[in-house]
Image (cartoon, rainbow, N blue to C red; front, side, top):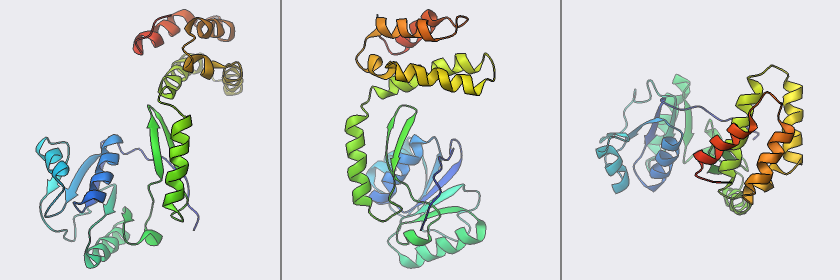
Length: 228
């Protein structure tokens, strides 16, 4: 089966997790990272989920799932250990056009969550379409070693530059060429190696004259508590 790659905006959207075990906990953590409003439905939950509920990070309905619980949700995870309940959830999701991931029926699930990790705004994912989660995990671990945490700062700097550049005009071809030059000239390596002076010189050389490269660099360094 072939899947369409997409990143979903779930900020402030209601997302359900039906089930309260360790798998449910993993799903909840991921949803909270994405800014979702999370509701858990399960008679019992992991201690950490209970603490999340007590701190109001999530909503917990301490009962069994009943028909109608999916109403108003953007997406849902069915992660119970009851096959009858899983089937009931899938039927309601089909009838309600709600995106569902069912732990016991990946083939009929509307979506899968790929192996992934984050570097600030950057999200790196690996999927085998459910064919081999173990392989996806191994590749993710290899990427995680090479794409080090400092890449968060790389993304932040490029975002600052993009805000300045795109705000000037709508020359998308020219914008693309500018970023190709910056990357080809070694912007990433200069940042990862903390060569701040050389990085500032690169920006002064490549950015349009009407962009204050010095102020941009100062703002970036202050944000990340760095000094030249």
